[in-house]
Amino acid sequence: MKNIYKYSLFFIAFGTLTSSCTKNFDATNTNPNRPTVAPLTNVLAFSIQDHASNTYDVWGDMNEPSTYSGQLAKIQYLDEARYNFRPNVVENLWTYYSRDLKNLQLVIDGSKKDGKTNMQAVATTFQTLIWLSATDRWRDIPFSGALQGDAGVISPKYDTQELIYPELLNRLKAAAALFNQHGKDDLGNGDVLFKGDVSKWLRFANSLRLRIAIRISKISPALAKANVEEITGNPTLYPLITSNDNNAYLTWPGVLPYLEPWAFDQFNPSGNRDDHGVSDVMITTLQGLNDPRLSIYAKPATLDGVYRGAPIGPTDAALIKPISRYSRIGARFRDNVKGFTPFFSAAEVNFNLAEAALLGWNAGITASTAYTNGVTLSLTDNGVAAADIATYLAGSGAFDGNLKTVYLQKWIALFKNGNEAWAENRRTDVPLLPAASGSTVTGHNRPPFRYPYPTSETNLNSGNSGPFVASVKDNFWGKQMWWDTRTGVN
Image (cartoon, rainbow, N blue to C red; front, side):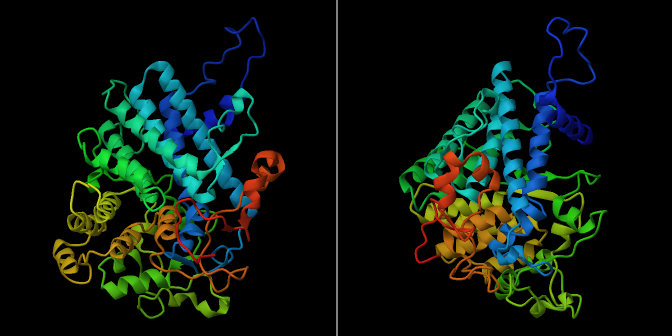
C-alpha cells in the first residue's frame, strides 16, 4: 500500500506537468523512470486515501461536521465549534474534492478506453461518494461542466443540488450494471478498500444509492421510492451491505504518513493534539438509553472517572475548564494509528431500510427487523457482547415503531462519520440541536446548514458562482439543502 500511495502521489504532483521538450526525438527524450501516465490502479489508491485523509480528518470532519452534528465538542481552540471558520481550510477542502474527483474521472475515462468494466464501475462508485459529500457540504456546485480543465473549461457553471442528486442515482445504477457484466479485469493492488473484491464494491454502490434515495425521501418521494424498490426488489442484481464483513471501512497501514486521521491528530510527531471531547449531547443520549456503546465511544473523565460530555461551542471558554472534566474520544476511534475510516456500514443500510418500510415502501424487510438488525450490527461492530445486545434490544433500545427512534439510532451508529451524521441531522432534526451559544453570529436556532464557498470561486469564477455565493448568509446559513425540508429553522 505504501508503495502504491507513493507512486500515485508522484503522478499527481508531477505527472500532469511533464511534457515533451521536442517534437522529433520522443524516443530519446523519454525517461522510463518518470512516467507521464500512472497505472489506473495507482490513481485509484491515491484517490481513496486522499479523500479519507483530508475529509475524514480533524479539518474535514472533527472540528466542524462532527461538532455541527452534535457528536463531538472542542475543548480547546473553540473557534470552529462557534462557527468561526478558517478560510484556508475551506479553500483546501474545495481543492481536495476537486483533485480526487478529477483523478477518478481519469480512471473512469481510462477504463472506458481499455474496456475495464470493473475499474470503471469502482471509480464511478467512489467518485459518486465524493460528489455526494461535496454537494452535501456546499449544496450547489460545479458538476455537469466540472472536471474539464484539460478541455479548456476553467470556469465551470454551477448546477443545483436538485439536478445533481438524480444524476448521482443514475450513475450508481449504471455502475451496478457494469459490475453485473462480470468483467475479467483485475482492480490491482490499488484497491485499498476491498482488496480487489468486486462483489463488495457492488454492495457498496447499491448501498450508496439507497443512502441517496433515503436522503431525498421527504422532498422527492416518488424518485426515492422508485430507486429503493428497484434495489430491494432484485437483491441478485442489487445486493446491499448487510454484514459487517462487507463494511466500507478503509483500514490504515499505520506507517507514516499513512496513519488513521483521527489518531494522527492525537499522535502527530509535530505536536500531539488534545482539542476534542465527546459532546454532552452524545454522552447524555447514551446514558439515557443505558447504551453499551458509551464506554466504547468515550473514555471516563480523567478528573474523576465520570463519563461527562463537553458543551459544543459554549459562550465562555472558561466554562469548560479544567478540560480534565470531560470525556475524550474512545480508544477504538482515536488511539489506533492502524484504525479505520468509515465510509459505509451495514448498520446504516438497515436503518435506511427500516425508514423505507415505515414509509410504506417495499423494503424487502419489515421495519422492526431492519431496525433490530441495524442496532445489532452497530453494537457488534463495536465489540458489544451478544448478551448485552439482547438486553439492550429488550429494554431501552427496543423498536417502538417511531421513525424518530430509527433516526436516533442511525445518528448514534454514524459516530466517526461526522460528514454523514451532519447531513442526517440537517434532514431529520434528530437529535434536536440548538446553535452554539458562543456562535460568532446571532439569530440562528440551528447549527450551520452548509459551508461557505472558497474565496477562489469568488475571485476566479464569479460569473458562475455569484448567485450561489449570494445565497449564503452569515457564512454558514441561508439556502437550506434541497433535501432539508425542516421549517422554522434558521
